[in-house]
Image (cartoon, rainbow, N blue to C red; front, top):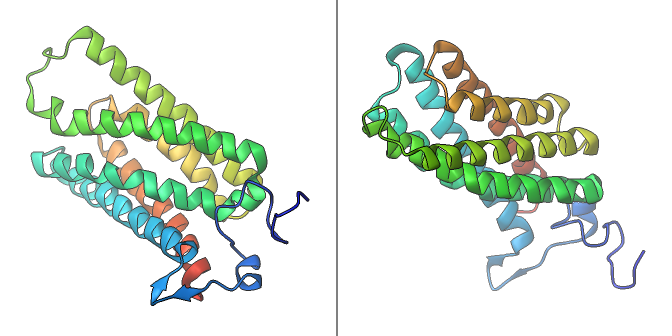
Length: 219
């Protein structure tokens, strides 16, 4: 273990203590301000919950109504909460996911950044345009951004499965569900795509709940 690395933490990988190690390193509360090692993961967990609602609720509505301006608005704006959620997920398992986990996190963050723009454009710009108005270059960029997101989601899902910190079902669900979500985003809406939105929302709620519970005792 390198000099200066606290006991129970892997050098350069743990963003905050988690699991049993969270009790081995008491978190100070200075001047009534909770330490970032409590605030950041809990903030990310809340963002994951908001993202889940912004995906699942419109998905449930669209199963009966099809895509509407209101559901597109919620989904398009909800993507802004993705990055803090993924940071919290990585921080929760960084002590166990190793170098591959760090690489997968980086790939997922890049893909998420691109797909946030893709989802925003699809739901808040292209939805209100007539078919055929999207320039070929714009369409190609949107497809490339979605592809990077798929690769990043799969890698991060594999990292979660390998780390075995999160439950197996949402870990597998993250990699598979969000890869399919990006594919279905480019296709016409069907009841199956609505069910996929609900499934991805359930995965996010499960992962966010795991992070929240791990840090609840320190609040």
